[in-house]
Length: 353
Image 1 (cartoon, rainbow, N blue to C red):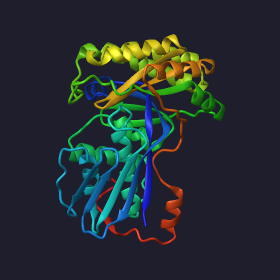
Image 2 (image 1 turned 90 degrees about the horizontal axis):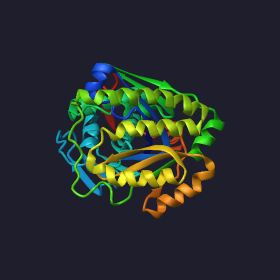
Image 3 (image 1 turned 90 degrees about the vertical axis):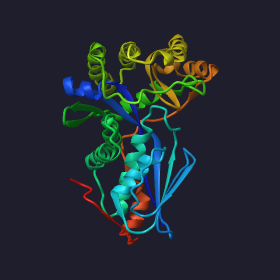
């Protein structure tokens, strides 16, 4: 018997950088996110061996620890170990984690993994947590256990699903959904494209900054502009106005470039210039320590030309559709569980509240 939970990945259209803790404390942040039909899966099953076994197909790692052993470690499985430890496990368990997008690419990999694992373990324990509860529990575990803060908007965007403004202020976070019509979603599915930046990115030897907890005041004018443009982008998305959306993305990207590490810019700039020459009206890049993506906007008549041009320089097109559903237990598996499969292999600590 197994339980399967999944969490979508998340695109950030606008507000990049305004979630930095210093900026949030002083000015308040605003992110504009949307979930897409690529998923992180958390597959949970009983294990006859008395312990916690975590298997990651993405990192090709396996961790096996005795039940309740508080040894989080500092490898790629430290986050799922911290989440699993939060639940008071009584019997053996195996957790298999698998993603449809490679890790460390700036697409919210850890946020999707966190949401999928929390939703799955809670349901296994007899709790059907709502989006707010999943997101707040993610903040609690990551902050209290791993002493990491920031990127709170990702947990909320993934937990809720769909198109959302995430408003961040000191001590609070608000999710404001955008309501898009089915025709608008069809237009955006065709006019918003995603490309992997390829194996040559990031540059050899490049290391991401360890933390964004401190941000210089010199960055604030750029962040103010980015926040204002994010607000305008939401209106363009609701109207499915591809021309306006591309223009706003291009303006925001110009502001974001000023805040990027210089080592990342040459290859991104080259790819972005190719995209602009071949029909992209605007876009932005996202990145992590193992790679990155270009998010681009174009009119339908330029779609195939743009895809071909970027494939010719080595980028990989990730065809996707926007999805409205956030983190969930797969319905068919949930149905089996509710018919009587025992879920009380676990007791929980104070999970909610």
